[in-house]
Each structure stands twice: as C-alpha cells, then as structure tokens.
Image 1 (spheres, rainbow, N blue to C red):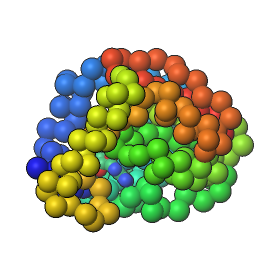
Image 2 (cartoon, rainbow, N blue to C red):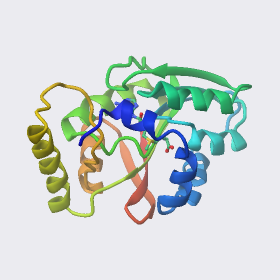
Image 3 (cartoon, rainbow, N blue to C red):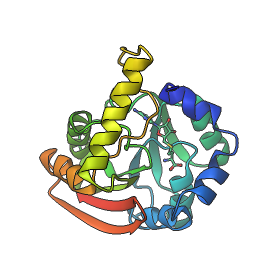
Amino acid sequence: MLEKMSEFFEKRLSGYDEHMLSEIEGAGEFYPYTASLLPKRPGCTIIDLGCGTGLELEEYFKINPTAKITGIDLSEAMLKALSAKFEDKELNLICGSYFDTEFGNSVFDAAVSVESLHHFTKEQKLKLYHRLKESLKPGGCFVLTDYFAESEELEAEYFNTLALLKKEQGINDNEFYHYDTPLTVEHEIAVLKQAGFSEINVKRNWGATYTLVCLR
Ligand SMILES: C[S@@+](CC[C@H](N)C(=O)[O-])C[C@H]1O[C@@H](n2cnc3c(N)ncnc32)[C@H](O)[C@@H]1O
C-alpha cells in the first residue's frame, strides 16, 4: 500500500539515522562529502530541501559551525529530531513542502538536498529548480546528492508502477505518496539546465547515489 510521504517518514523516525547510515550504499562517505562541497565562510546561509533529521547538516556543522540553515521538510517529527540535535545552531525550520515554500531571491549562499528529490517528475522539478536557482546569490551553488535511475527504461518503469498503484488503490488526490521515482542522471541534468543552472558537474557516485554540483 502506498503511504503519504509525511506519514511514511514519521513512522520510520525511530532508527532512521542508523538505517540511512548502515543500509544506504556510500552513506558513510556521501554525507561528509556533500558537506565538504558547501561554503566554509562563517555565518553563510544555506537552504536544505528535505533536511529530515539533519544527517547532512551534522557533517556540515563540523566544517562550518556558524552557518545559518533554512531547512524544509514535510515531516514535523523529523524536524523535531533535527532541532533536538542542534539546539545551539541558527536554524529556520519550515514544516511543509518545498514545492509550496517561498525561497526568496538571491538570499542563500548555497542549497543542498540529500536523498529527497527522487520522488518527483521532471515537470515538478523544473519549476522548483528554477525558484531554487533564483534564491541563490550570484556565485551560489546547489549540491544535490540523490539516488538516480540506472536507465531510461527503469525510470519509465518506476513512474508506470506508481501510476498503476495509485489507480489500483483509488488514489486521485494531489498529495505526495512515498514511492521512489528517480530520474536518470542525464534527465536530472537536463532539468537543472532547463531551470537555468549555468553549469552542472557530476562529482562522485556510490552505486546509484550521485553528487551533482550545480552553479547558479
Ligand atoms: C530519505 S529522507 C532524507 C532526509 C535527509 N536529507 C537525509 O539524507 O537523511 C527524505 C526527506 O524528504 C522529505 N520530503 C519529501 N518530499 C518533500 C517535499 N515535497 N517537501 C519537503 N520535504 C520533503 C521527507 O519528509 C524526508 O524527511
């Protein structure tokens, strides 16, 4: 049965960090690696899309303890766990969807997202990435670490299966349901370019998880 996105993560909060770090290929490396690509200037401003319990932020604060973070997540419980970890940090946590949240113009030094954006279509991402690019200051970058489809055939299969499951379960609302629908890296890059990012560099991968650095 498909579960609503926010409920899916609420239910899995207990043991979530341990699960991510021990079960996801490369997680022990990709969290610190992603953090290492973010700006090191004290007090810089970062937006995190789908920050969850803050695994990437935990690594980032080791490098830049005074960074100011805007974190957006659908799950209140995940955000509570995050706040409890970083009581002394400057956090602006928004419980809601990054598709509905205003980011502002030229306000962030960088953006980051880890293992959150593989649930959405090219069309949904195009508008989001355009707004995200606009929210970055000149010279800013978006560090995206996520899991990608290994082929166009698999990408199509994930979307077809989701559509079939929704039909079978009589789901016809516009809510987000948890089902992985990753794009291929090539399709993700095409959307990021279409959204206006000037340069996209594929940095590293751990199995199906890749880190991309996208320049404003
Ligand atoms: C697999 S977790 C990753 C969390 C964290 N970045 C990490 O790597 O541990 C995915 C997170 O994305 C959040 N999420 C999914 N869709 C979202 C949306 N549309 N807006 C905000 N958060 C979303 C979920 O609530 C969940 O906390």
